[in-house]
Length: 244
Image (cartoon, rainbow, N blue to C red; front, side, top):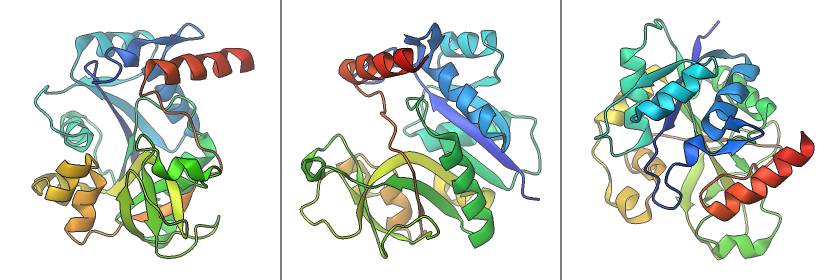
């Protein structure tokens, strides 16, 4: 059986909503909500990788594992790689990079991505959901992915491109920021220089495509609200507190 490790990168200095990892919903910080979801997926050990001691303290106080990392990293992937090296977890085959600002991520989608990675022997996989409102095609806050084939439950097609806005509609989906790497692929990725596309579009995954690393895409059954702004936080807080 392939051994999987989930690492959740987190930092306090997000540009649009500083301090968001420690914002509370139902009395629990956002980063700890994500940690709880990751553990409930039950696919492997879970570590939060953070550059801020406040995040480490919060996560550990809620019973989760965390590793302090450098504050010099340019990307979340660099951060998770440092955490992997610092961890005492050995013989890992798959490393999942789960975004720390999506506390509403569906556990079944996490499990499904891992299962498809194993079944298809993929080196790098991610999630995407159906776009239900075409106005979102031009919304630059929603990252889109175009796949080589239509995205259906049993499919795991390659991504052709990622962008913040598109005009076309065919085979275009709402990208969800979760990545699953084979260990070899992660080690290769972090050694690559940031590509021009990546820097201009502020999309780390373009570095993989620019270096001929295939990214397979799994269909997510739901599209969680990511917390990028205060409005996102208040909307998600209202939904989660109502459900609770």
